[in-house]
Length: 110
Image (cartoon, rainbow, N blue to C red; front, top):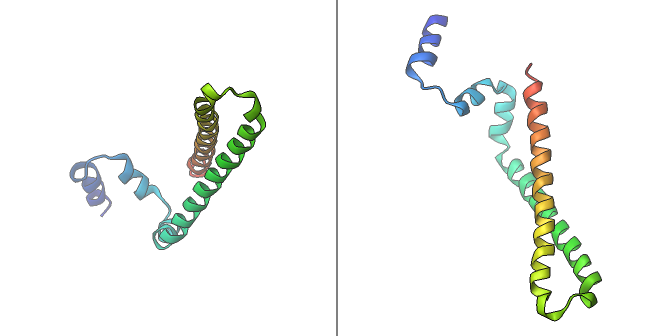
């Protein structure tokens, strides 16, 4: 039986990282992940809503503080730079959190 499984994995199925990830995922967590698609979507929507709210609040606050000091000729360009700065901060923060969570998850198997 083990030889048949090894033959199937080695010879028949091509080696792909996503297949290795799915097969190495604990069965109980696969079951929970399968039946909680709505929960995952809600968590992702909540995170994106919080990120958008953070960018909106911070950029609006900074723009309103510096409104009198920004010349009219460069006002729109300055607003774009301020908003892009906060979007970049949020993007890097999300990437860092995702990387930390992934490393914790990977090291939990070793």
